[in-house]
Amino acid sequence: MSLAGHKTRDIAEAQRLCGQAQHQKAISVLGDNWQGLGVVSESGDPEILLVLGTLNSELGSIQQFAGAQEAAKDMLSRAERLFEASGDLRRAEAMLQLSRCYWRCSEHDEAMILIADVLASYSDSDTRLYALTLKAVFEGDRGGDSLEILVQAEPLAGEFAHPLLRGKFHGERALALRRLSEKQPDPEPLLDRAIQEYECASVCFELANSPAYGARVLNNLSEIYRRCGQFEMAHAYLDRAAKLLMDDKANLAQVHDQRAKTFLDEGKPDKALACAKEAVSLLLPGEQKTWLQACLATQRQAIKAVKALEAIKKHADVASRKSAERERIRAALVAADGITTRAADILGLTQPGLAHKIQNQFPELASLRKVPRTRRWKRRPA
Image 1 (cartoon, rainbow, N blue to C red):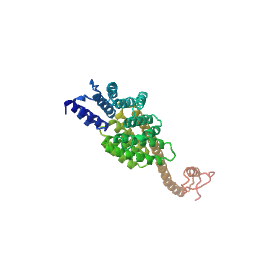
Image 2 (cartoon, rainbow, N blue to C red):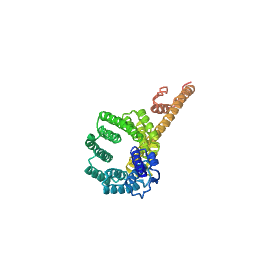
Image 3 (cartoon, one colour):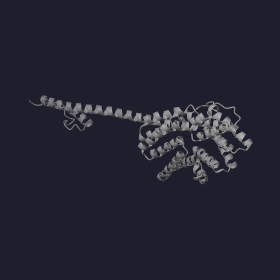
Image 4 (tube, rainbow, N blue to C red):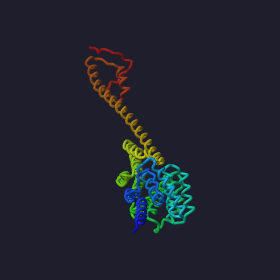
């Protein structure tokens, strides 16, 4: 095989690995073509620009690397124009990857315009399935009806579709069902359907050899078990997801955020706040403002819960101290009553005012004498 043939094969392999979220392997295959995260390549080869732009966008999101999305937009825009000039159908892939960059930078309108252009220009099943799934992701993120979009995509997600695309479709439909369940008085039927969709997604990602996407499914499954009150199961899924996402800061932040919510539901705000802070710290350096805002909301909720718990504990401590003091006084009065009663008997005296006062405050001291208030101190006759 010629040098050019080897180069073409390596670039195609790097693109395949990148699609499976096996980014470090893709970088190894690229060799000298990879100049580092956030570095804009001056290459005029659209294939190289496509894979470098995709890697910058994905790794920039994962590592929350500032400037990576802008670098990715530069390279993907150039790849898209070069593919268009040559009539190459891979222009659609460049446009879809570019739409993800815009979305990650919170430039939502630009992302949706690119999706619409792809759907209007291409009829290939896998391309349209990917475009519709991305559109559902974007629409769902901003509170729209993603299920309606996925209904359009369903005929394209059959057995002949690429397993990675099928997995993304099923994963997004599961998420849409979860969101819909939150608005229902009885969410269980929709949650059962969501679990089935996630199981389908997990199988597809396994077929596509993509453990990173499989980890995201585990994180989402933990959300369902949390909502069902099965906290032990939820933590178990989060543990498994975290092990698969050690180098994926953005998605690891989602795991920490989900664990914070689980601890909040368990009534453990201190642990929830620690997890929420970890999630925010992972997202702060990057450009994913939407995810950061969601994690900050969880952190604020945890802070309120911690303050509420501290107030309850403080009130309980005050009440406990007052109760303890009251019991101490009560015990002292009981003891004193025995002494004063004995002393009065010896001296032949009665003290009506003190007896009534103590009886009114501590009615349980039944041993106190009941004497009329009108009587005065008198010495008993000898």
